[in-house]
Length: 463
Image (cartoon, rainbow, N blue to C red; front, side, top):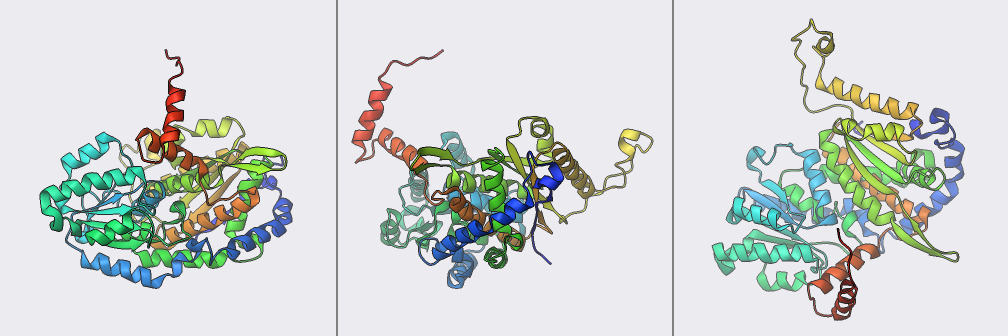
């Protein structure tokens, strides 16, 4: 069956010892609190957590597919203008489900995909110097329309299009994904006549990959979005199960909480063994860090909670990080992402069979070598007493990737309840945005600008 699995054997005390491992009884004792967390999450499904029902929005999915069919063959490039949750999921889906060399040779006339999730002038300037905007479709993604990075890019590329194609001619080259009614972009869409899609209410940026935020660019470059959504729906059923040991979201959320709160594992490492899976680790880093990293206020005062997400790629980071992971501080736990069957079989030649350092490789495949390298890392971590779990993809398909993304979304929602924080706000991010608005002179932020100026007027120390 095309179903991902979560193996937590190597995080248990019976495997790695009681100092760093989780006792199975601890997990069982959490059944009540996990059920309560699940009840809290499900109680908000039809209210402010509408991302839970994204797999079932068939009318929206068909609208996306119709648009993708309408514009097929019209553009050489699809350019996503977005940041954070409006970019990381798009990139993760593209790298997981399309060729790593898609931009060199797109199949079947599909467009190339570029995701410009930074306002670095060298990035944007090089793009303008290199890519023909008249052959490009720009997908502007911002629910509020006030995201400074995205909107600055929109203004730049809109002007470049108008200068080349004119006021009317540029409009088919812009498609907007934003709020249904509110925000800055909606009236612009209405006045300009841009084609648009909706970011639904109750769908925060980092939980939006299965909405038009992630689905539109995916459909445009040939990804099977219906397979993706089917996988998410299948995982939704598993995440609603009651027994903790049948529910992968409950197990994963409980592991995260126990390993940090009781075992002092403050760093959560996602080790992706597969080039296609590398950006799923980046996507999860935002989901975990922005959701769980919070100030928690209680009767005892304020505490700072949340794990630090770290991303690693196997086998690349065996040669850069594993030394730390195996012999460094006991402050980390690990999630290994592994692939059962790869799309390609690459055989290693039997040349130089007389040399012992090479002979053992000849006749084997790269899949076998990658699996041996992965198992070597798993064995080293386990023997060193480092808790690790494995999420196994039978193959990397739209269906399995959809399962993975929904699993992580749901697990993080449960984590919010376990940690006692709101997993769906981001006040720390907003503080940085407000400071940037003030520095750029946005109207209404004069007081904050004055405070910042006062701080900057203090004598600084530099060397």
